[in-house]
Amino acid sequence: MKTENNKFAKAEMLIRKPVSEVFQAFVDPEITRKFWFTKGSGKLEENQKTEWTWEMYGFSLSVTTLVLQENKKIVIEWGNPDEVTLVEWIFSPLNENETFVSITNSGLKGDSDKIIDQVRNSTEGFTLVLAGAKAYLEHKLQLNLVLDRFPKGLA
Image (cartoon, rainbow, N blue to C red; front, side):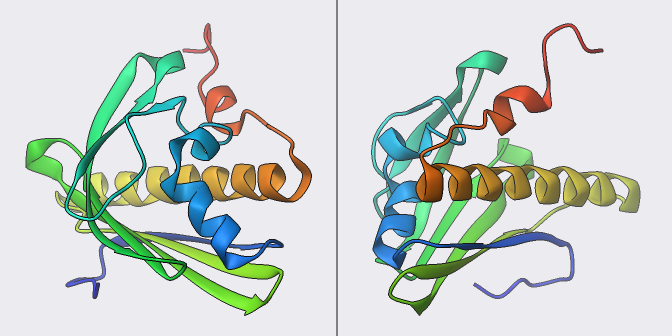
């Protein structure tokens, strides 16, 4: 999906695993929960809604999968009804055991301060997600990056 403006956030990472394995890690909540959210209502399916939950924060959100091209691309819509944005994953196999993943969050709205805040939060968040995915897929390590980003007791 083309971003209709320059208001977007982006994070990218090389993951040393085959594209099919990396793609499935973002489609199947049984894998995704090892590095991002704690619970998903089901695998991503085109034109379907899925619920993602971060139990440690008492937070859930509904995502709608708009595009699901096997081993190539995922596009979802998410956010509060008045602040829906698009998130697009592009999976680029560099060879049979390396995949470059690019995540773009676009459609950010608001004044410049709000957009800067959204870009910063989204870029940071997706960078942690990609680093967690890399650690889990390459080394089976669960780094708890998303859990530890906002520890209890820290104001």
